[in-house]
Image (cartoon, rainbow, N blue to C red; front, side, top):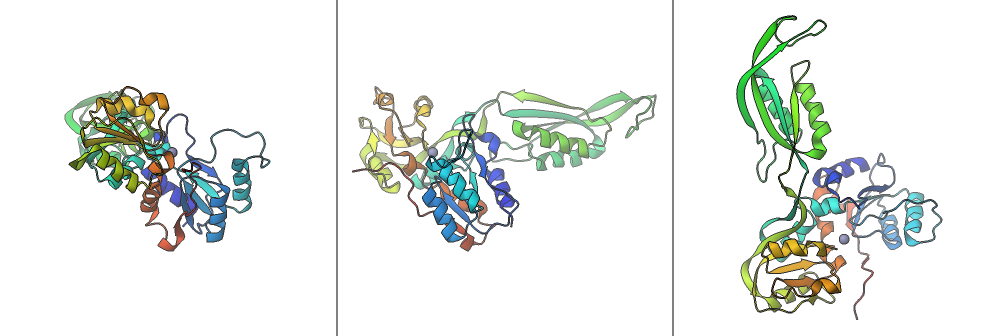
Length: 364
Ligand SMILES: [Zn+2]
């Protein structure tokens, strides 16, 4: 098993185009052609984590937070990031980060947090916009099934818990092949009519090149006709934060105490409780405070985030209970997702969850 095969599985689960604009998820350091000797899963890459990988004989570190966020003009070891770069390269360790692409993926970081709390009917809080395309193509009746299936395999037709979604209508296509053409049907120089199926389906924009390549390769025509339209619908399967429901409503303080226990929170910050019962929960791990307006609009009773600024707390007592549980604490179970994604590729003895607590924040 090569490192790149593991990377491929990670990117199938959390495609890099799902990452936010500011992010730098993906391969950080190293060559992926090497055989994998072991994978160390962690939230942050520090020198201690690289030492742990060396001791365990792992040549791949998979982190949630990227080690590298900016360009470097020199690497001299003047800070911990540069020292990590040097140490990883010297020890032939590859470093890969699955960050906001994993936050935004269905089944990603926030779904894991929801699972830990025991939420049901979990849905994306802020689905991504402008990430979908509609594909329309016209295929001779005889080849419609073949082309449609190939498009589905290439990633078209996924809506919620459904796959193979398409709409098909029959009609007639016309064309006249000119000199130099080798038409699939009809005769050069003569107007031809062919019974065709108009196939409509949907795809994530980032799959456009791959899907068009497949379409052209399976479509029998010399010049396949296809249209791609931007779709402004929300993409309900990708986005920031989630909402979900508790099976039974809980009193605010009971709920907060339970959250504190589950996430081993050193200091749980919250705004003034208002006496509401908690049933609908909105949450976003890490720096998720930007979703407060959406959490309020979703009519959630509580909004759980990793971190939030002082001023953002003001005047929301009547809107929602805010619970700030710590950035590290909120994302600590991310390793379980990575473990799940790569468990079939690597022997269990080769997958290690880091024992280094990289949380830089301590509580008295
Ligand atoms: Zn984070």
